[in-house]
Length: 347
Image (cartoon, rainbow, N blue to C red; front, side, top):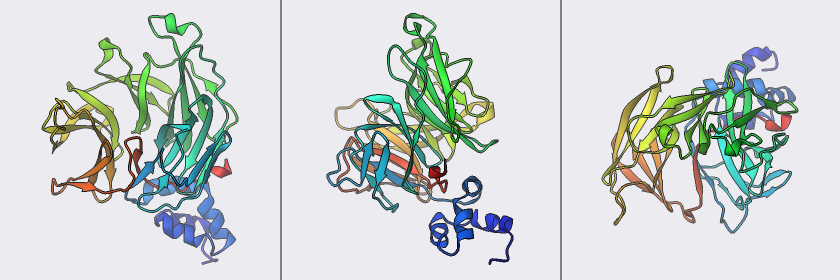
């Protein structure tokens, strides 16, 4: 294979499973360098079909596989079907994108780290230079497919903004591989709530406690670095999530079922009621508000979480089945995870 041009090797490797590529790293220094090249990681994202797996972020596991420090995260874990990361309660998950996770320290949100579970690599990022007088920053991790760059946006109250009825929010952007944050001219129109969902080249948050905009989503176009507003369907929205790279919301208002609405054509900003899952609310509850829809995983199934239980809904058979995971707690964060070949240690 030594006689093959490198561009042909890039093309072949970009279509192979990640597990195979990691084995091929030991074939030769040339192969190892190609497999660790960021260009291959970006090609692999669009060419190799991967089945999402279940990723658990367990805050109360008694045999730590991961230790968080101010400098980053030290890992001792294998990427199998359900990798468990423990002792993470000192850090807060801000968001995820293409298999990369972004964390801040709970008591100091200036401490920001990027984490690739597949490679078990952690990168400490430069602290945001903003100084919000009140409240915590909100972060979001996204990917610009035109430049193949990962970006983190930081949203904060500007000085004196808390008393401003128009919510004078500021924002900064950090591009992975650079040395500093950049302040952008205009922040979001309203405060944000929850973790952002990255889909269709943009980050998305629900609006925080503002009746006039309770049916809106704040978006951030990662490429253009611009905020915008998107209308929600006329439903009782539980939360946002990513469903097969599409933006989705769930209606939890019924006590007999949940409805999943998907924005199939993002440019048109039109919502379609895609799925109805029959599931009864717990005894004494008026609706299914305790259900969390995680996303797609495995061979076409939707993962659901209720307290300390996981369920999987088969899109083909409409079967709802229980997934047994010993030691799963109510505090365990569950993600549908696709591995990313990118070696963030190179940055």
